[in-house]
Image (tube, rainbow, N blue to C red):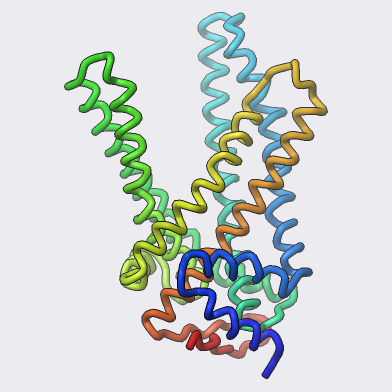
Length: 309
């Protein structure tokens, strides 16, 4: 038996619980270190450029608006420019994230099954799955926006019926509850994105299949999502705080150094999360006793996934 196939089969025993999935996700990238490094660079390089450009373009506008030295008309113009810049940066951020997701999930899936793909093959696989991923990602975004809007409407209603002194408490309660309630659908959404990459399925069909696939493993998926959010949220918050901070006391070099460190940590956590979602997808497949063929787009042949039994 091929060495990598044997490793993949032996790791299936780790997938019975949350800890097993996380341990398998930590071990998996080491099987193809060269590809892992390339995928990391694919995500880290554009994110670093994005953070740098954000600091150069949006930073001065934020500082001007905070200083309140300009006339109201000038401040309004700067505010609109800032909003437009933030929208552009958000779109680019989403594109980079989806590209990193496609690269990580395709490479993780192939590596898990013992298939050592080359970088050119990975790019062809990304090209083949890109359209499906974007369509499913748009559904994910629209549903998330609708959920946030609903939560804001509920929060406003709570504020109107409570006293002023209880406003902060209501905001905290509603915010925490809404976040926890969102973790399960977020798990379904992420599983749907994985399905869009690894199967010929996208949009609501992929999300519907994810909802069926996760049956019997909802608690496991919820705990995994909660762990990943607890891991990524502090890093994301510090990165955003550092990006929008215009405190001159830190110094330009210090800000660049901290920005580089937190950007690297952010990318590593994102990559780890994508590997976890990939392995969770296979864990759900195991529960439904399904096999999913992986097509190596550059060679044109199919490889059946390894049995988890």
